[in-house]
Image (tube, rainbow, N blue to C red; front, top):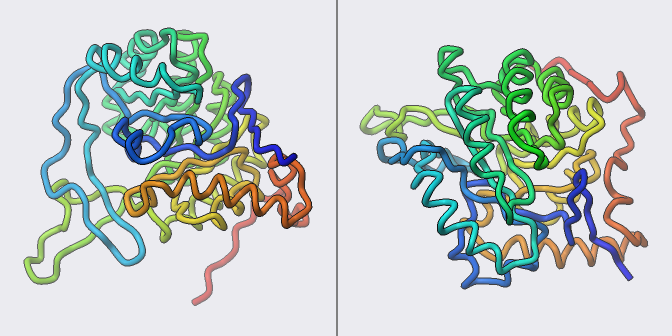
Length: 314
């Protein structure tokens, strides 16, 4: 019998497919059985209520999309009262995504959501750090380690650190998160990008810039997941541009133990269920018994310890 069971630290998932934060809501329960996927990841919450960024917040670009949602939130009290009880009816683990503007605020919010029914906390350290002129925590190893240490002291629940692609120190940041107590890495959040309307000459997003997601971003996020999996001993969860079964399999082969699906769900709400079914069929055709046999099976020749940078062609 084929086994899709996936372990992420102490957590056991029935399969390695889960949503990316911000692309999944309770409404999808009307579309498919939410227990068919490996875990549930909530939309990122903040302590305070937030209305989000000015409109327009989303625009399409060739092969992908840009978004500048701005983490609208009803606040932690509403989340605890309404969202956690909803997911209590399901067996799949609940992963709560949180965001804050400072390390102390992060730690305080982490304490508040460390309640029964929460299996792990995904900390969105890709968000701006007001104590570092708005630069994301995960842009530097030092700020990554500082915030993760405070978070680690704030809860006994597993912590998943969500990294940013907007750094030139990918592996150093990954190692810093691990050293400070992260139980897993989510690699990665969206890539800062921009689009301009040539007729109005205005940016297509109300906040000028936003995050690139979708297929165009996948090769970058896949590279990051591969590098991080080579650099740390904690599990890596691949995230970015996953739009079909082949993408899922690529991430697993690259070293990710699980994946998060985002933009593709907007196009096909049942895409994650289809991926679970397809992954099982793929294992069968490959003569594999467990999904773990795929993880990290890339034939890279161990060139430069897997951290390869090539000069771009002219």
